[in-house]
Length: 358
Image 1 (cartoon, helix red, strand yellow):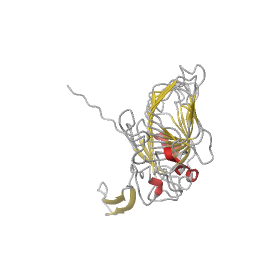
Image 2: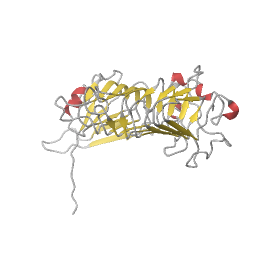
Image 3: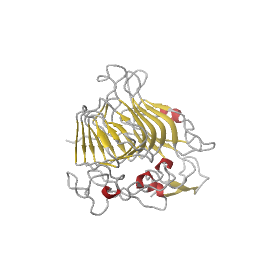
Image 4: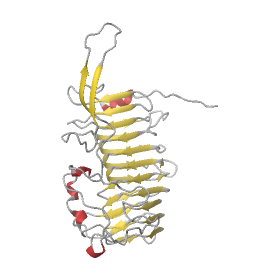
């Protein structure tokens, strides 16, 4: 015997530009009108959308943090708080966010249980916070099953994540502070900065690098982590009291040219701080590098091996060298009403022409 359930979800549009023509000009009002699992299409705009709070599962599509069809504007949001309703009868668990530039994304707020089952993909997130709630941390504020793919992420803060996966992200600037977490996976990411505080994680096939002028080694602290098949563009100092294990890693790759598996020794530092307005470096292993096939799974060490290997999307626009253009939403080119005059209860005919963002 088979049973099926049909879930009816609505689609709403938001545009805060004057005369934008969407259903809503206020993002928060559109969110408040959503039922669980509704979808919001948020248009790019010259005006940043104010911070919003989400207290039920919804799906958000922006026009891309790096839209390829227009360069002046993007879908930028001051902040998103994935939280709980006032009566704690619903929460934002199950939400998905695609294609936005978010100044601050906060998962969980206040003295409540964690918010789980979140997917964030193809976003630029300046600050990603996992709210720790109030003491005792281990019974409040635990976030489970967070999936982050192909994002550009700045600072990351917070406590206690479990069963979370981060892969194919660029995670930049300051230290990653996720103490108290466990059973997480960080695979095929680029970490930029000299201090990493991951905890309770498998750290596999990543690249740890730095900005030009950062001379010190990577400071690896945290607890109960395993570092396997990673490349460190400079040296690394592992915390001796943090229960960290490491194997099959390559160090000083990018400082000592003769040992560099990534090309010229300081290639990475060629202007990354001006992202996204400069050319990207080349992360590939050199032919004959010790890292080729050196991984524990017989693939290359670094971001092109392992379970989630990076794919280069080479195009005339170098912003997309390592992140392909956003493809979730096509760009509307023409919208024509073919029979503008109709009888009551008649059928209106329209013609829509759109272009893929590939």
